[in-house]
Length: 281
Ligand code: HPA
Image (cartoon, rainbow, N blue to C red; front, side):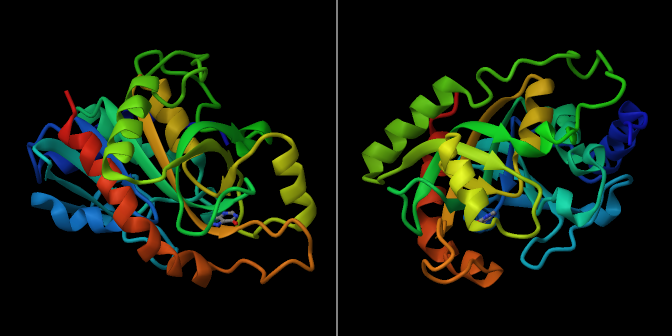
């Protein structure tokens, strides 16, 4: 499906949020698995449920609340996406990524994004935090990209570069923060696919062969739109399970396992993100 008049949707959603808060956020933070606890640290948050924002889809996945939170975190004005929409929920790409467009319209010039992912790199263990150095967009390669359709030059260029999708200077900052806090942070390539079925062992061997370190069902669409809009991006994956590259190896992955790994990941991811915010210039 080609995109509708995105600018019109952005404007309507923008107005619905502005009525509730006049905060001008500098950073959009997308709370995936691992960063949920960040919501509790926001000073004087204004909550705007997605159901109150025209054009927004409402998440159907257990564990994903759907609301914007606007407030201050470590002294920085932020807008937080508490919950996101995944492609496998059946919504069109432009709608999945509309909250990123609206956050940008409200003032955000950077995005910190997080997700749960399966570890493919043999050195990764459940509970690890991986900073995203790059991604492979399998959904996009299969022809589903939020930038497909007529391009509105006011929103971004027709052919945006993805050479540095994940901002090098922000990654340097995060590396320093992690080292100072004594956190052993991994860094690698996130492979984004549609889901909702987990991968077969043969698919996982394929992903490893082509250079993926972790695999998940979100994030790449938000990153494409954020980069199209000129936002700087920093991304983190929480490794909630490790890939079974052979069918007879360990237990199959489950959503329960993904939820259970959260407490191991959250303190580290929170410390890194707060450390980065504290140094934000
Ligand atoms: N595969 C895809 N998505 C995921 C996984 C996985 O193993 N773990 C968490 N999200």
